[in-house]
Length: 239
Image (cartoon, rainbow, N blue to C red; front, side, top):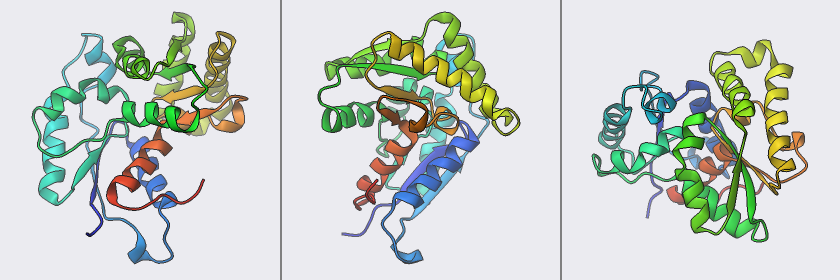
């Protein structure tokens, strides 16, 4: 059986989309061009802000997300990944409007914790305010009997500032400041009992790495890329 074609529903935001594609290439065991996977990218930054929609202050992203998935299917994709965690709040609604399978980052993270860190029962979730308040990530982790702690409101505001700074390109201008916001947030979760940190927004790994932390760090972009490689029919390269 041939390898499956990966569809990336991107643009939410563009840098996370580029990084996801890069991670797919980096984690694919290949010695020549022809060993790599066929990847189709639909990057539409016009999709409405997911956090604003979750909080009831903005337009639903579902129509454009569904349209993007259908476009990828027509182009030849066998399944879709979405390098935007907040967008997963709307995953069930999107799935009802499309035929193509969509991988869930919530499932990928929960299954990774079960498989690789079975003794960890309490994690810290860093993400957009929409993801945190939406609660679906926490519900999925609870199904795996994993407790989730989140940032206080004041710290969450700093996390959102860091995320939007990354989206606006300020990571290049203010790398130390952006990183400090994220490190402080992660440390607050660790102080509250978290034994691992989940980068629950695809911008966060662009500013926070495992080297910044003393507990396991689950980079959702890397996990999503590796899950896509497996779904396409290959075993990712060793980490």
